[in-house]
Amino acid sequence: MSISVTDTHNPNTAVPLISVVLPVYNGETYLAEAIDSILLQTFTNFELIIIDDGSTDGSQHILRKYERSDPRVRLTVRENRGLATTLNDSLDIARGVWIARMDQDDIALPHRFVRQLQWLDQTGADICGTWVRRFGTSDKRIVRLRQSDEAIKMEMLFRSPLAHPTVMMRTALVQELRYDKAWEKAEDYDLWERAAEAGLKMTNVPEVLLLYRIHSEQISSRTVIRQLQQAKEIRRRYWEFVFNSMQLNRIWIDETLKIFSSPLSDIDMNAVDASFAELLSHHHGESRGVIFENLIRLYLSVAAHCPNIISRFDKLNREFGAGGGVSTKLMLWLARSLQIDSNGALFKKLRKIYIWRASR
Image (tube, helix red, strand yellow):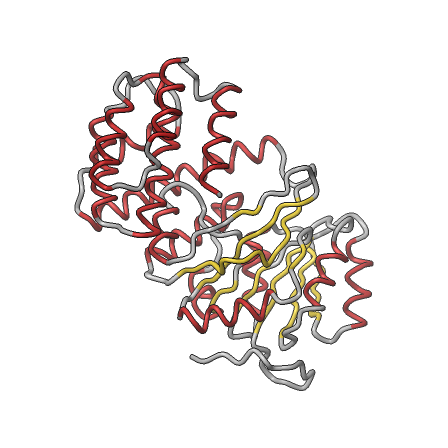
């Protein structure tokens, strides 16, 4: 389908091209900035669906002003039902060909919609995210997400591969998949995993198109624990899907996934090596690079417990060749020689160095 990015807004248009979904809950501090960044998009043929999910602060007052001033704003105010339900309720009333996600505390760059529509037209993808730049604290890093469908689906073996508030996706497909309330704290990772199993094509525009705000109100420590547990379960689900499709050994999955949790001393590294060797042998280019980057991170975390970790890495690197060579072996040697525990501050510094190098 060819997409025109020169469409302008017409309040009499029956079907907007994009339905922007913006759930709100006690978001008054940053809400106006987020909404303004959508209403000031250079592409204007959209509706902005906002559901206030039972806010107890001044969010509703702000939202009413926008509802009165711009006919593209479709506002619903109701009792609290949770994020997944709010997202699904928004999907139910969406009229656009595409769903564009937005969060109440982020800022979309003015050309976000234009670039995503162009990229979707160019790639034929069903789901399209973008890079993000963090702001709000001293952390101003650019988060560079994978570009190709194959690489994104390899990244999903380790973490969520898309920045949820940047995503644009085909309405009909996401209305069919829907958000699952059972995964409320990792509802996006769950959706991407099910989309991958359904064969949907994913991509990321290799440009920063959203500013992702970091602030203290985002998530509680209790929520983080639940989120991590849910991510662990989704990760296992996807590893099983990938390995079953490749008809590989189930034991390899079990041993590899042990690395994501303690203790690390009883892992069968031969099984881990075998699982990564199989993944690497089936992938090339960007997706092979993804596998190697995550392999290195995981091998760093077990280095203190594995005397021959360098030779294991070296063997895979010689055979498949994309693992960073001497500098990577030096970091593995340091982690092994100094017995750097994966839960300690020194390991976090070493891992941060690797992440910084990988992002250059």
